[in-house]
Length: 429
Image (cartoon, rainbow, N blue to C red; front, side, top):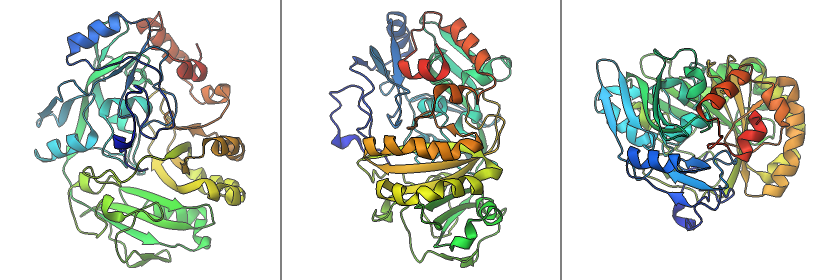
């Protein structure tokens, strides 16, 4: 939920996450400067994993051997106005890409709450924003270029490889190291953002929560498991979405800018005045030019069916007294269904139950099984890049095309150069 600030961390430890809670491995950490150099590196490795912006809270990117970062690769951005697409280097951050396409009258289809994350890492792990019509970031990928385990360069596209493409984009880094991606773009449309506060407890029912989440192109609801929504961040397309009144569903318009975490300065957040502006300055929660947190947090998130969100929240609410001492804030977001084989929103319009925890790993790990037990009737799918304790067999059962994915993985990486313990455990070896 907050923005990575790596200035406080000792990156002499090659695999340390920005939050300081995950050690991705001892390295060595390689930083190739060209695709040819990356190909030679991968071809010569017996085990290798790629790091993005190190924002994952799980061990999805961990390695017991080589690690590689693409931060030294050319930051290529090639925009095709006629086809409304952009070819972008995997290491480019979404905030930088959004500014570049905006200059050509175009916009990204979706953005996450952080503009600081890289295109390659975010798409590989199922990162998303919020909105009933907004699919995961990986759903915008039209083509992907991978350095495969043997060092070859493979390009797959939605048009030319329809049988396997939906398995190749969101693949947890197990099919190859992404070097370039082609994304679909949309016409630039101005947006506005407003925040309403302190909705009463009686607004936690299914009808009212559904109305809140449908009030704009992108909506996030923040709460603290005390029985009511504390903040509703509503991001609307100007000329399409109806502007909200000062009092809406008994929540009152915030008198000034706010931060979703109590006590944090709102200077780091995107404009909440209701004034129109570029989509990339309203869709994320945070501004690219700021690093408002030292990253001292842990995150968990579970996808449930969109229609089940009120019941799912009600099921977990009795744990509120135990959750609150460990919590910074919780967020509810929605994600449209997609066809990606390993997407937590695979063929299911989803709502996400998100927790931003204080950096208390033992206490959080002890509580998560009880939260997951209460969510179990709603067939939760955990976010691949966040912390959870669900039985891997239960997770695997949520993905009907997992067998096809394993076959594709075995075809592209028969020696399992790109594996790690995390993906073996969750996807099956």
